[in-house]
Amino acid sequence: MRFLKTLAIAGAATTLAACSTVTSTTASDNAQEQPPVVESFSPLTGLPESVPTPVLIVKLDNTRSAQPHAGLKDADVVYVEEVEYGITRLAAVFSSTIPVRIGPTRSARITDIDLTAQYGSPAFAFSGVQRKMWPAINDSTVVDVSPNKYASAYFRDHDRRIPYNLFLNGPKVLAWAAEKGVSDDKNIGFVFSPEIPDGGTTNTGAKMKWSEASAEFTYVPASGLYNVALNGINATAEESTSQQQAATVVIQNVVQTQSKYWDKGGGNTPHAATIGSGTAIVLRDGKSYNVTWNRPTADAGTTFTMANGSPMPFKPGQQWVVLLNSKTPATLLPLPSPAPSTASKAPAAI
Image (cartoon, rainbow, N blue to C red):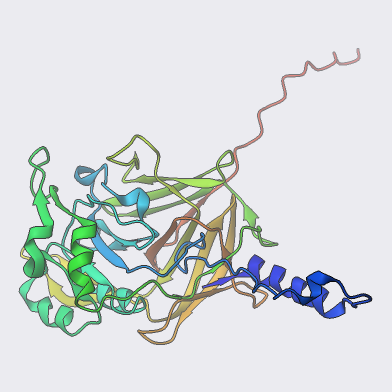
């Protein structure tokens, strides 16, 4: 993670120090110089972080029956990915804050294997997978913390109906995963800056539709964030009435193909290619930017580059990344039309 504003300030300070001239000697000159305080930032959110923290990635159901989600407002990064029958699921990345209750948890998909690899060896929580996919999980870089490995970290909420009632205890599962060598947060290619980059197109957000799902992000000028709506419902937190909001929204166009995995009903699991390159739209501060993305290998992060060749800076905060089939473009939401003038017209001359 690079923080553009911090680097610029540090560079200016270095320049000023190099240009100064000492003209007299004082007692303070003999005092031991204190090293500069270097503020560190999360590579996942761009917000201040004192020390690196372990990464937990949780697969969440994303149908109407799953809402409201528990713990999602504390995620650092949220991915939206298509699964069978045109519905979507979420992969929520936690590191800065680990909620005690996260869910509802659902099963993993083949797209998750490549997607999670850029995080190193994160703890990966999911309800299970079909039998044919277990070898892919076992051969991946993740630390498997599914109920298959650590069932006592999961529990059913009987106020919800199956299969939308499986939750996990985040701190408990991470404590167990620590013994397995789970990775701390690290640079996954994101660049952050609170400054709004030049260019872009002013709009109010974007909407994406699948055959049985939708995601909409609407800019709120008062907060400088995007309200999240999933499947036509404003996304709120189970633990509070607060609106789910995103600081940056990335619509990453990916090549999506049919995988070798099918469910019992005959639905195919699509595979979204997150290794490679392509185009993307980045939303921040009420603007959209057309960028390119690149990820050369599984263990490399994903970089986003503006048309002028400079890194696309994300706004610090919670990041949402929608993995969208490149054949299904997103709809950008235009600015509201100006209200018609109510001024009375002068009578026409006779």
